[in-house]
Image (tube, rainbow over all chains, first blue to last red):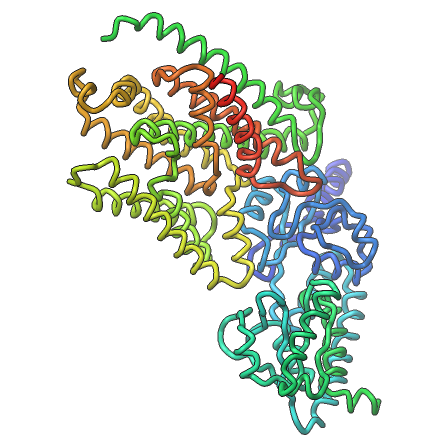
Length: 292
Length: 335
């Protein structure tokens, strides 16, 4: 009887070493209780894992995973839209974390067919981003750190909220993410939410997430602030700024409110979005920033 | 029955055997090459199901590399054969498998599928296939009954392609999120998502098409001598033309629907093989199937190996190697 009990106990850890979780796409995923070999399928996931102090469990990341610096030296598994299936399999992961918007669903299915669990996340705004950080923390048994990270995010967001409540006027912002052609951000994007939360008014309306604009259309919008969030180098920004400066009647030119910001603070759904929010608030409402 | 059958049969066997050896060699190279790296010994163990084989390496070889090599061989065979048939039917050395607008129609269908959020298989493949079939039907309706069928077919095809190109540009300008990446990758031709179950379906459809084209290979020889000569020799021109046109367009459509329009291989391979083994279509058809397959497998290996990270489109490699090689052979044959 004792022997039987011992055998059951010996077998039990194997059975208990897997847990079933439901990811943000409502799919049931069976993952190891303690995933130790994780592959991040997007730069944003890589950042979140480093925020959760789980960098040592990362065995592979996608190209352009450049933050923090330690991420840049990890093995690459292709870009997040063009994943290298073979490289992923060869790194023997016990968990891959994917993003709904960007990772090809076909690669995710192939990974699952090869018995590699894939947990998908779908952060759509700051609130779901906070949920995502908590869920990834829970998945990797890092609940305490995840709670700490999200508490910090929530308190900083709340601080901005309190400050923007005192704002009398919301200036019109043109958030430019592409230089040639001119591309901006529409509703239902992180950037639109950040502009609103930072006490600004996104001049771009309509359902298109990333609409293109002609110079004439931008002039017609008469933005008070132009924020250029481009992956182009400083030279590109200077050229674009010089082009806008050719239109002295443009309120943003008149007020000298054309700024360049780091695209990584605005494009990636990571806790650094809160840094982006604070930066935007300082740019849109310098009067508060000076008073602080 | 032509009198030279035994000689031709020997020639077909000789050429096929030589090219088959080449195909096997590049296939082995194909399953031995990949981003994860693994020596020939590891590959041999995995292929032989040896106990020393690492399960992960075996899984990579059987589930990722092997399907990809088979897909590349099928795609290369189909496109080369497609180019050969169109060059013979239209009697135009510039003809290639996409000349009748099949790729344009397919691309429109695929882009619509991607914009609607369908998965690559079967969703996008189905919309792409419907697009190419609709284009073919439109083309046949436009040219049916025309006195200069060949010329009108060629011109209509060029026009349909140009029109499809404009629609593709318009659709792409409307797409602004990550789906644009998917469209770009599809348009470049992508073999990376090869899956054995889907390849079985592809092979099941394509192999009978190859056999049918081979059945008409002698008729293609006669067609090249001119319509009157072919008719005198007993060729039912209408039947041969329509059968080859529909069969070739169908097999090219199904290939493009699955992995996008891989460029250049269909134009250059028939010419290359014609320069090397002569103009007889009875030899050229199997040579295009096996040789085209080998060429595509080789180009796919390079597309995986050449970039430092990630992959480059196989179509880029097919053109980079094919064009200079073709010019060299052309110059040599002209001397």
